[in-house]
Length: 198
Image 1 (cartoon, rainbow, N blue to C red):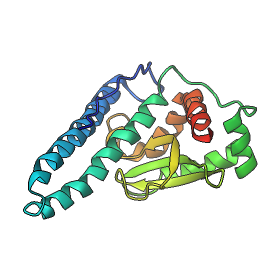
Image 2: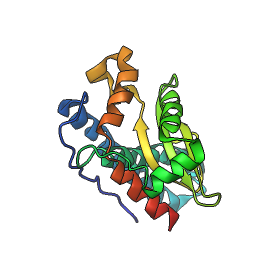
Image 3: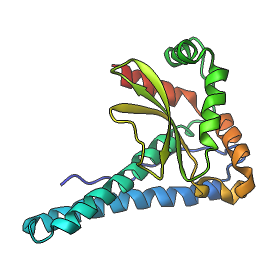
């Protein structure tokens, strides 16, 4: 059976987002990893008597999507905060793609920020669809509802309240989004894009 190990992230001091908030947030991420493993182990166990456990197996399988999404979304989010902020070069492959598709980086960023402040809990995502060679902005409810099939996450911005309330209160959502983009290491998104286009 496949098991997953929580990754570690070298996150420096951030603008606006405290170390305490990051440390607490990482504990939540580790919980997603732990529960993903727990559910997979339970599925293996219950599958020994599949007919008897069909309902519970179905419910666990549904729940697995939530835990898995929580694990993978957070890995994309935290990795983009590693290594300190780096701007996205307009001459980079991703920089050119954003400008080509959205008109300019600023036009994309305005649209992405509007998605991020959507009411509710979830994620703002920039994804790449290899089939159509296009970038797609998305809002993901919770951890998994609305994930775009067969796309690669390039940027993941956690918009659950736990990501920002400790530092910004509930009224500081917009400032949290602004600070995320002050802290993001665009070389990580560029790497994600390079891997997605192979």
